[in-house]
Image (cartoon, rainbow, N blue to C red; front, side, top):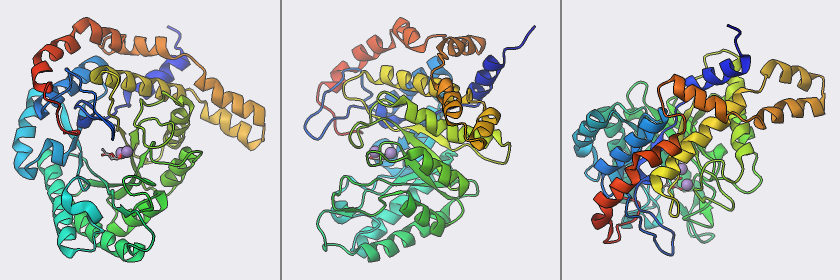
Length: 397
Ligand code: RM4
Ligand code: MN
Ligand code: MN
């Protein structure tokens, strides 16, 4: 039987592709101005796991669920056995453990950068608790977003805050189990608008390096200024062996948390290309953790998550079609138009029929969104949860 090299390449790429989904993507969330309550939204951790299991049943590539400590394990490590029983019940494993350093009143002026030693100690204890949760659940990553910053020039010492941060991160790193990874996320602004303590990848990289070898940088695609060449940042982080993971989403203006690839699918393709380029070299490169960081207010939550996962697979499959050897030759001969055509030609291939074939070959529904509708899962959960959601629900949790 003649083999189809395109099919082979796509299947090989898809076989190694998995993406983590966030627990907060299933709960009712809102904007700063209001909240649009969905009757089917998950109201507790059991329902978040149930929704995640449904996404995994339909797509086959979301075996782990990212957990946000305050929202999902309000009692910290004491809640780990409860999570473990849900892991056993649903077959969905605990994914990255996300400490929450931004919601409590004490963090008004910062968490690990707060001028108060007492608040810093509280924040550090929470980081250590997150590490302990990770150990108890066998979770690979502790993924931290530090929201600290200030709103007005001169009101905080940026310099002293660097020292405080390094101290907290070093303590956290020292508690990691072998193999446990600590991810340092950056974001240029919001909630603080004058300065953010970890504002870009350079700061995140320095903090990760000073914390220790198990600390890596996390790239959230929504956390960049307009026009930033994110794939170049990715290329540098790979070069420096410092790329730990991604939070995928799309944005038009800032940290909009829109569906991955909905505004600029070519950007995600270009990012995936950098990963696949490194993989094609056949070295010891360990693929970074792919995670979704989205919460939808307008789209149905499970539906949006399935759509996101499918889009991620499509873009990964497209990126796998770039012929790395041919591209390298064209780059070296500075054949600009041909090089660009080889690159964007892959992007313009319609891989959706191949994806359907791959799914069928793996015993998965060929069309996950259609299968979701057929299953009537959303209708069922709407009925089950309507009452519980009628009250309004709190933010994210
Ligand atoms: C932040 C950041 C974090 C996420 C929170 C909910 O902007 O992206 O990763 O945990 O939002
Ligand atoms: Mn994020
Ligand atoms: Mn964000």
